Amino acid sequence: MSEILKYVSKKRVNAEGLERFLNNLKHRQRVDATRALPQEAFPWLFEGVKGFRPVFEEDFVHRGTLAMTPVIHVGTNNLPFFREFNKVMYRQPNGVIAGRNEQTMEWLTGPGYFIVDPRLGDKGEIAFDYTRLPELCLPKWPKIKSNDSGFSVFVYRGLIDVMRRVSDHVTVGRAFRGGKPLSNYFILVRKS
Image (tube, rainbow, N blue to C red; front, side, top):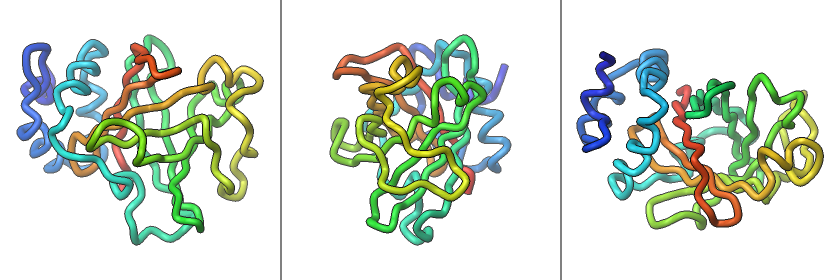
């Protein structure tokens, strides 16, 4: 049994213990620990950390990070296939944090650009808003394109990911479309 399951169960999430456990790991260990969670545990974690600690924009891109510097968040979702991905975020010169998705099906689904919006979500939450696009992307990245065209409509159109803080480097999210919750959850581990 993975050690992370000491802190996450259907009956209870020990948010303080989990935060301490994850904060004491190195990046690769955090990724391995979060990937050891069974798919059914993702909703338990999302609900279990609600209101525990607020999540801030700086949890995704530190305030001192230079504009247009990529910050990688290694992700795992609860879908049956294509579970591993990255969300790469950056602060634009205007101060707004943006990001995109890197995953094996990107050639079909598109890069899925989004804006990090602290005004969305409940108190202490932040959302990734796929209905708004960044002004700029990094050199050599895929061109910014609407999430309302091509195959992207099936994945990113109208999508809002609500994010909650788990530890200093780990957040958990749930996808919403049209204000309705989806059964898609994911965990991000910031690489820094």
